[in-house]
Length: 263
Image (cartoon, rainbow, N blue to C red; front, side):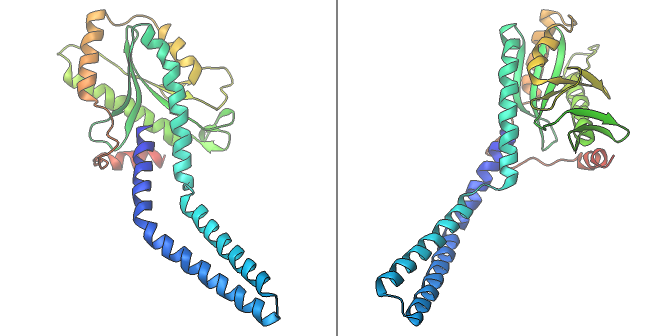
């Protein structure tokens, strides 16, 4: 969600920079089109009233088309918007965990990374990262990996696995010696259909978004209240809110990410 807001703000700023040039271009195009229509109308002998009406209509049509093209959001922004809406639905589904005493941290920055953790959940059943996937279609698996409809999800699963490892390492590094912790990565599917409602693939739990809270609540007790409080304190310091109005941080681990995407 934060990444969508960041990209939208960058796009709005870039569009403001293009506004003057776009207005000049649209006005020039409208003037040229109107002139050509006016000259053509005069040549064929159309009445003056008809020529004027046609010229105005053409000019307005050109300006309307230019405005539509200028104001229309790119497909990439629309795709991020859909993902953000799916993430908000997952966040609402996780509200049940908060009412049950869990801590849910949304949109948290991952150290040394350009990415963010959608939801970091901490409670008596342990620590969980929940990432939302908004692809449509039934989930299926074959030798090439996991698919949502015709979209391959292997790279996404690799990234979520890596994020779980990174969050685990950062938390353990800040906790007292002797702590044993394994953050469980979860992918919450907001649209795709899971044949059996639950799956475990390469260490990642796959669930419908609406079923994540129930799964976490029934996973068993592994942390005492004091341990939960300590873990929440460390997590809030280690993973600050993802910045929306700042440049994206560098990503020293990009080569590792590229390797996962190429699998």
